Picture (cartoon, rainbow, N blue to C red):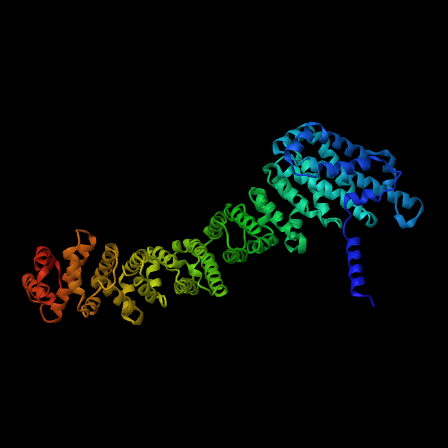
Length: 617
């Protein structure tokens, strides 16, 4: 049995065998009689391996990049080894196979070391890098890099480590240049060739340790607007970007670059069409939106925003896909998002619903709200991001016409709004209810919705002037028509009537506007029917409160409404007691006795007589 020490040593040696060798390890393992320039490149690597941009600027000014590019070209075109590169075999085969394997490894090490030294040299200032690339990039460096990628992107199993060294060094060079915003290749044909090689690298067996730089280069390529249409139609690109979301371990960083690439692609009309037609794109974006990494979430939310704000003719998403994205956008709140990303999320949520027919909007919102509230049972209403997201989600609801929905959909939607009110989303709920109540077609349905009047009564007692005003405006709209007022006289309505009386009597401190809206609501109810007047007349404090309001309020529609209500209620009371044959003056005199407020008699006399003459009972 192996001892722990030996076992640890065995595991260490196994890890060493699996890990790709470093460039210097390869150089040190070369035969002593091979080209000594490898030793010179190794020394150059030691010399150039620093991050002092000013020193690299000096090195480039002395021609180091040009010299290394020439070395790379010679290493790639070397006739002494190119014949043997394709020789089958490895070190253990002996004979010509061993020689061919050694030459292959020697040549690949020389190419890799040259590229590595070149990448280190290019750690210069951005302006220097741009100038250097203009001088030799398109006609010397990029052809050499593409040649190396074409040769080493596919290799036999026996040459995996050697190919990995070359591809890793080339990928670092490409990333170094593209990170500076430099256009690597200009024509569409060159873009397709380079992209196909990068895709081949990611899909190959040698991608470990390389794919990070490769994905970053792909993302940088997508950031160039002229490349996006070509890249979207390139076979395999979306597949490798989406596959990266399932990466684990040290390859998880690839998801960030893949999300960045998708976000860049989503800025293009053609790309949006392709992405919207693929269900796996939506699925991966939904996953990334709730990712633990902030950068991944930011890119994914921006991509969804770009997709959903396109015209419907460009991007068509199924209802279940929209629900999936909405749930993910709400789920991302728990992860935390910066202000810019939160704004993108709001735009994405609105974009998902703005172009849909009412039944789809209602269906999506009902399901998403319920599931989100069930999944987040904490005090979500105290979270400002939750409030912002719910506000965005509720905005299209306010413009729906409930008669366009089935009875079940209508009830489910209103129930979801009431569920939100139970979670203290008062501003969001009141704004939505008030917008809905503006449409005459919605008023009766809302008044008869189970629990609606209780919720309004609760909102009217909130210690928030804005919420009370908006809720009062909603109540006023609901009772504009006679058929809605019948709901007031059952159990739910009694609580709302008590809230009205509290506002009029001053038991609840509200703004003048809210009080005026309450007076107008009472006036509408009084005008609707004799039955309403008789029932309202049972509240002994109602007429005195209206008199007080009318005598103290400045001229307005609310004051006129108060006067009309006083006269109609008083006349109804007299009629109930046999006062139908009384003159206007006699009715007015008896009304003063009923009101019993001598302090207000002067003002009351000023505006009452004409009104009494107009009333018929």
